[in-house]
Image (cartoon, rainbow, N blue to C red; front, side, top):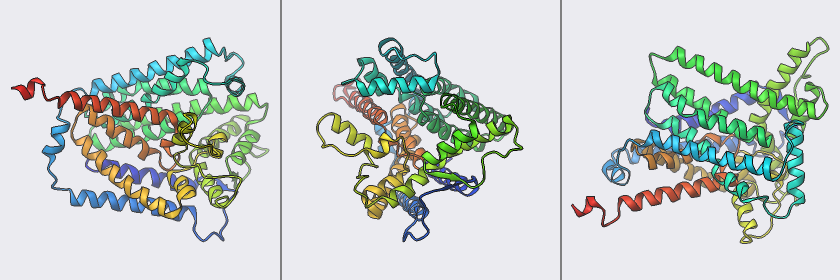
Length: 427
């Protein structure tokens, strides 16, 4: 399917907007009196990105493919590369397990939420990093996400492509259990949704099988998310409906109707609470966008919503000055459009949208090469594009590490392939 990166970009934003229309949740920060509203900025973001991508597709429709393929010739290592990248992510997970359990001695026997609190307390009271295993683990674990996206882009039968994602999927679930975080599961869910969408439209004879697998995945994902919700509610000693109301309020929203009624059974109440919690994690970036507009001129919340991961990295390296990482410290997600508007205004949104449109065009051109190194670059771009409605993925320090290491691999590959004394050139 040509231009599928652009189609995926449209689809993720349409689903995001539909969630806001249908979910019985609303923002507690939104004001009708604002001269410009979050949806309008998001629409401009999507529109400029789409126009730029379509212009590139039209202008370079008859571009010289041989020049691109000379850098990235066709090869058969894409499938092996997916497995290799997955194993790198597994190594990162093992390093994190060693650091958390053996070195920091975090006690997980009392539950995930309490273990997460214990780990955070130790992190605050500690000077510097806990161990080299923590550093290495957090640097290379995000390869699990890249491997999952790469599996979407390779030309293989549906079940084989799904199988290639198994290692990375298990890695992300275990990592989320260790950290008690929701970021990994959210990104994984977005990637898998469009994995199944692409499989559905590419396979005419296996649509029923793909729909069945998608339902199995969604059921499993909701079950895992519900278990996280249950553990947190249990650790807080609150009923599910009270806890989800507290969660929604903390993330900037409010329910349109009561979560549970006096006539609701315990099972129905817990199920509805879990579903609302999942929806909250997906849509709360809009509520944070409302907060960003409401506090844009506030001195209490300074700039730092976009590229915060890079700023934090430079700050730790003592290259950049201190800044107030309000969004990071409070575990709040801002969409790409929201983060850019908060820091750079409408001009920043328009400029970055143009760059994202170029990136979408480049991602499809790289995919057409059917080359392992090109797939890796394409996957990095694709990961950012998939997450634009919910998070600005380049804010995550581990993703910055992953991108840097990936580019290092690609540079090494291109250097070896184009080395002036290679056998190909001698002959």
